[in-house]
Image 1 (tube, helix red, strand yellow):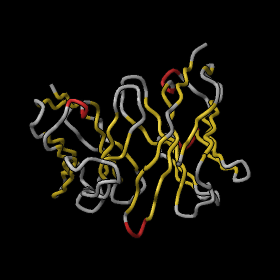
Image 2 (tube, each protein chain N blue to C red):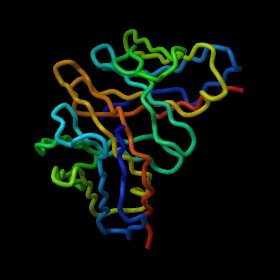
Image 3 (cartoon, rainbow over the protein chains, first blue to last red):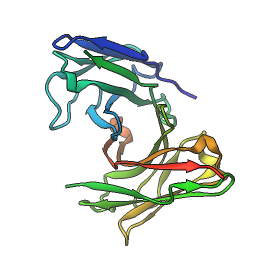
Length: 108
Length: 124
């Protein structure tokens, strides 16, 4: 099977930059997608195809990818950005579709 | 406005079959670009993709669950369904349905709209 590895937690103060990483062997060849999940709610897509931001997602959310690591960056994090963030991608064959273990972002 | 609504029993006995339906509002399930998928989240845990289906019946399954999962689509009712057999307590989770864009040549593979989820508990 295939795995995507994320840090369990990231903590920043309001206004600081939060960076959440996602590591996977196939990421040089496959896009990464990022989902935000607030407590008790369904996930929301915040970044797709490594760097693209869906309509309605604030500009402070950005994505990048280099080698086997994709990164979600939240510039000037706000208290309302608090929540869990999951990366998602597939293995090189496209057969295994997996989410990372999730990163709990605390903005406090 | 696209809206997905999961429905089904909230309690299933061990060894029985879990059945859920996702009704799509605001879009036709026959939209050729999109698959329709199921994802689950065990209490306090992460997300796990289960399966996805196109209106034609073409489908993808998680290899870890494939032997117990059936996904189906009913275009006349604009809904799709999940059946998970021989359930155990480990299948207790919030089950989400979502619209799933898969374009293999372009490398696109994203869940862009999600339902609110429904909690299914496996217990006798």
